[in-house]
Length: 112
Length: 116
Image (cartoon, rainbow over all chains, first blue to last red; front, side, top):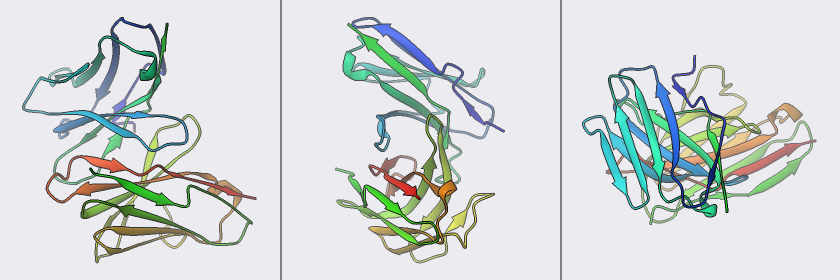
């Protein structure tokens, strides 16, 4: 049972445009969400997070939106840069444990 | 800050041997460390949660006698793959949570294990 889903395995965006990565979850107990960026053969790098008490969190070019009623979150990257090309994972936790449940990842490719 | 290291970064071993992987938080103390494995083009799958000074909590389907976890201090956790087999070949990644911010995990660079 996949509690965190990223339905788009890949996304291709032109440099300078907006990249939107989506994530859906099924567990209503999740109250904290994170996005990680991962290059091949490396560990994930933390990007940005959001608590369920908020619906938006922004950090530079990265903005995460949370729609609790739809159990949906998204990561916006604007403007997209070639260096953003990587696999992006969303993750969720329920606050009672430290466990993170990861989505399956979306491979973002930003082309010039 | 919040740097996590893993050693070795890659290892090749013969079937039947045991391999130990170390995970260290370099500039912070971690109450909890996590071990994940990742198969090619798949998500990170949590194997176990490790708390300093206590037994690790394994996820369903993970053999605790095969994947031995020791969390001896607030900065070191080890994963030992015992009697490794080719199907254990994978990318193993650890992460650590800061004492004060348990929801954000910081990941190590991973260890590529290849069992011949």
